[in-house]
Length: 324
Image (cartoon, rainbow, N blue to C red; front, top):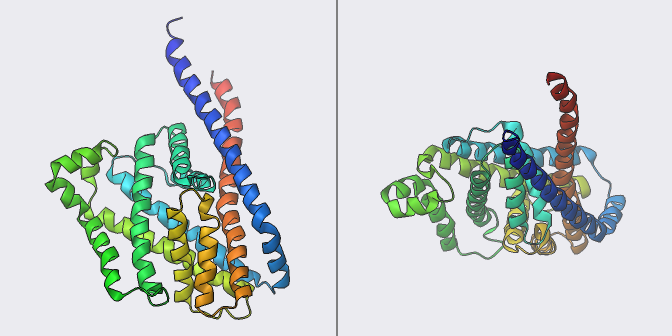
C-alpha cells in the first residue's frame, strides 16, 4: 500500500493540469470565435471583392510562420544557457499553443499560464520557461521600438533624438550579463525567477535581439505580401508596411486587456496606412483581412499540434499495456 502513494500525487497533478488546460482552451476557443464573428463578415466581403493573388497569400503565410520559428530559436538559445535543454519541436509546440492565451483579456497572464502548464506536461521547469518567455517578450518590445523609430519615425512625427531611447535599451540588454555579475544584489533578485541567470552570455543576448528583429521584420513583410495579394497596387513601400505592423503590434501588447490587441491594433494600422497614402477603404481591407488571416495563422498550427499530441497519446496506450 505504501508504494502506491508516490504515484497517486503525480496522477492527481496531471489530471489537475489537464483540467486547467481544458478550461483555458475552451475560453480561448470562445474568444477566437467571437473575434471571427466580429471581423469575419467584413473580411469575407473584402476578400470576395478583391482579386486575390493566392501566391502572395502563400508568401505572407510562409513569412509569418518563419518569423515564429526564428523567435523560438532565440528562446531555445536562452534556455540552453540556463541549462534547460529543450527539444525544438517541444518548444515550438509550447510557443504556438501558449500564444493562444493572447486571445483572452489580460492575454499575457493567460499566455504565461499556458506555457507553465505545457512545460510541466513535458517535464520542463514551468517557472523557467514562463520567465524566459516573458524576458524574451520584453526584449522583443524594446527591439520593436527601435525598428518602429527606424521604419516609421518620419510618418509618426518622431524627432530623431527619440531614436536614442530604444538604442540605449538595446545597449543595456547587451550589457545585462556584465551588469548582473557586477551587481550581486540585482543578480540575486533576478535569480529568484530565473535561476542560473548569470550563465547567460552576451552572445545569447545578441541572438535574442536578432531573433526579435527577424520576427518583427518577417511579420511586417508578411503584411506587405498580404497587401500585394489584396490590392492591385500596395501603394506604400515595404518600409511603411513594416511600420504599419510594428507600431500597432506594440500598441496591442501594451493594451493588455484587449484580446490580441483587438480594436487597438486594427485602428492604428488603418491610421498608419491611411497616412501613408492608402485610401480609407483600402486601409480597412488590409486591417480587417490581416486580423482574420493572423488569427488563422496563429490558431490553426496550434490546433494541428494539439491534434498530433492527442493522437500520439492514444497510440502510446497500447504499447504501455503490452510492456506491462
